[in-house]
Length: 290
Image (tube, rainbow, N blue to C red; front, side, top):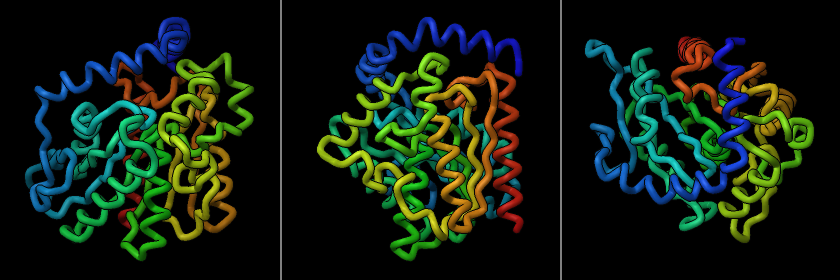
């Protein structure tokens, strides 16, 4: 992997990881101020859905597929407008991108986020005949799986495929990588994962499959591609998810990347970010074509 990726991991581990809880609190304070200067772009054919729309870059693209993008942030921080730079990367590949806004903890605890994204997806699929695919990073990756399980149970048209970047699928933090990668991970420790989970869950069980889809029934879900870092504490949230999906007949694939931080696809200065996104785009387009 690239020199810049290895150096970035080292820097993040020294400077960000020990101060992550403080940085998250600071982000929650400053985020509303930043968002005042960034207005949302609603979906043109469904303006009442809370979220941010980015049209496919090619103005001649008719009936472009919709990428339903679920941002991360541990269910504590983040907003679609702040991830617009990621949406633009996918729009340049020919996708109309919609990132739904969902409520954040601890002000709005589980299952508020799931309720919001399911409602947004249902409204979108009712308003548009365009094929839909899903992408999500970190908490958004786990939320994508939970959402698709709920949609399947409700008999709603499912997306054609989903790509997950370092998904958080086990809020009980039981994966072996939680212990093995405690000192390697550039961002997280098991303790900070559990603190974030408790803020989101409140009184709900960590093993509730609506919150931790790794404990749910994955049968009937669309094709899935997961990208995760080898040194992440969340690595086994991906490996176990893919193993369980394959066991019930889901077309599930995984790539484990060395020397990259959590959700590196969102770091534009890393060469590996562009490579991972391109592989995700190719996967989605192949499944759309099929």
